[in-house]
Image (cartoon, rainbow, N blue to C red; front, side, top):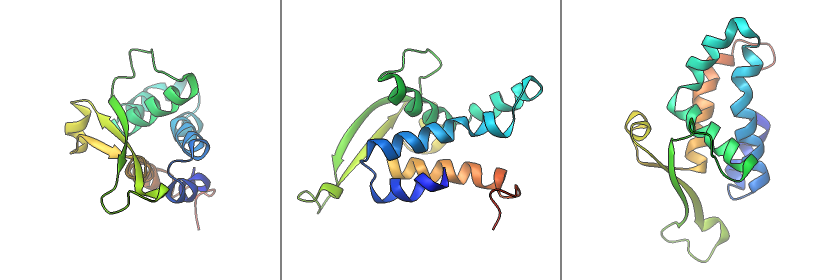
Length: 136
């Protein structure tokens, strides 16, 4: 996931980088808490609004749409021109519009891809920093 972070921050409209980041992030709970004995812990983690949005992005990209009823965090997506940057490709942002109550829990009605990436990393960092593979 960390490998894809810098690529997404730099090339936030790169579908491959975004897909790889969000699919990896979607499966972190499965990798860190494997097995039936950890099912309740995984479910609790995946119920966080940030991970619910991440899951919908990952599964929507994989299937080109999310038909599963559990994916209801995102109300829509759009490209938005950043003020002062309309002539540059990187002057655009991919914006994810969030449904209530997830928007209320996040404190915002929409997020850019880069904002969501930061929130995903902020979610996972305290949970994995003690693991040898993530240590310094």
